[in-house]
Image (tube, rainbow, N blue to C red; front, side, top):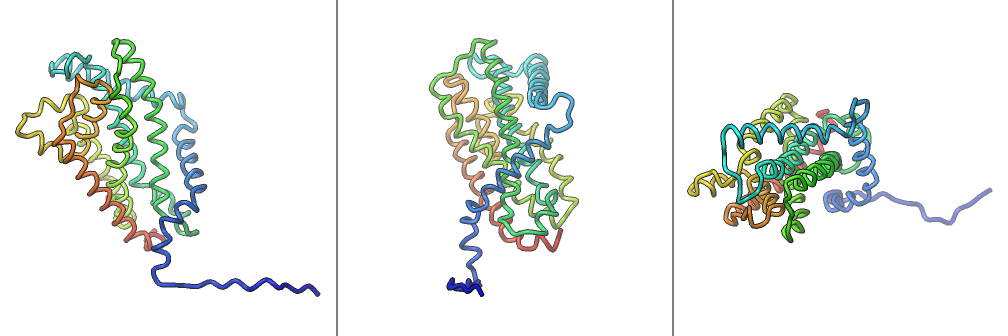
Length: 280
């Protein structure tokens, strides 16, 4: 007969304990985050004809179209002596990153409904894992930007060291609304059809194919309520330096709007995630 002197383990349920440990659980479930992120990247390019090259083709074609339409036909001004193609691509990179995160993360909880309904883990891991797909595409697009800058002889200065900060800001701009949308989509399924429309409209109201300097001075502060204005201006400032000065009052407005949207997204997601398993 085998006996054990180990004390029996007891599970203690305490009101509010799960909420206090929620953010600690994110670290405990970090392996799940990497598994989901790797799966999303693999699924994106699995069984495609040209695979990862799509990350080259889409932004390059968009850059060419915007350069012709806005630079050649509309003859909109560039910033300083910067070539218009570099101006466009410097705005296209953060926009593509943010729109990709918003599109993928907003429907991620619904896409992973079987996982949500069976096991416990912090549900916020799911939309955060989709960020990695956008970052992979972004890194590939950086290679195109380097080639375009080399072609036109554009050499960045010390401002380029600030580029990682603006990458993080682009992620923050997208993940806030994405978390809010992910929570809403679980309850109202038809809301997922609104996201592509919002992304399409956002492409034209954000200064992607043109410089934000074309907006009249008296409207620039109001225009900066769109947080992508500050992100795109920051990217261009980091890449073009003195040719693209940063409008600090507008950038401050974009930071405030981004912080509010991030707070609202996390708060809405946390308040509704307990009911995800029942709604799905």
